[in-house]
Length: 333
Ligand code: GDP
Ligand code: MG
View (cartoon, rainbow, N blue to C red):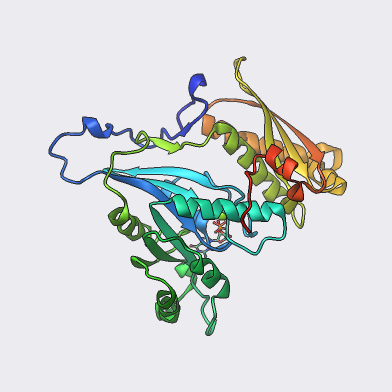
């Protein structure tokens, strides 16, 4: 990624992509109309929404893990392909919430779907040998999809030897909802993703690009710093610790030659604090250096990253804490 000029620390932009001329500078004979809009990736937890976002962007901006509820807030990625701009919204998986945090995550996903121009409803293919299924959790999500042009995307087809096994699933879903298209794909192996983009393009409104063509995300660098630290906590510590982890950037000071970033990791229990810090601080050290590498890669410059660990019991159910930690009001369930 290209470095963030200090004044532009607010938006993450990708320098790896070639910068193309903004639409008004395009030659007048450009035949294809420009289409742009918001595309919400919606589905239950773990179907591969974040993997699909990263695959489409060609950059790992969203955290992926085998655990459900890895994505806490909507992650926005911008993909510009010629005359088409997809503002991709990777949403938290819709689930039956057990905490205030869970309710807010669901609310964020529903909001993103309502605000989108196009919805991609993502489900996962059955594994080989799996018999008739009810797809109950997927159907629950499908029942509340907003009235928006929607594409059904069936992910993880790479783990299916016989594609005919998809047919009962496709039939079950098409009964319950009107889809503009159904696309089997593998987000991991990049199979079927260009077909998905073609179908989505056809559903996007004709309008000028919403962001500069080389924008990767319009979310602030602070957001990604917090996410990259949380990602490393997820990778380094197991069991129930990650579920109760929240990360907040407390200071982002660019006045020196290296940005100084101070981050707090909040954990749900005093005992978790010990685990995250580790014997002699070793665990926190590895988390910190891995996260710093990710941040430096994104910013293309060296940074100071200082991390504290705080035990904040009950934050997932405390409205004031949730607000402090950046989770919006969630009246939804
Ligand atoms: P999300 O909760 O919907 O955002 O799902 P993630 O993107 O975090 O992925 C959940 C799990 O599914 C991870 O372990 C991914 O590696 C895995 N996964 C995602 N896409 C694919 C795919 O196309 N094929 C296979 N086999 N696994 C995938
Ligand atoms: Mg996710």
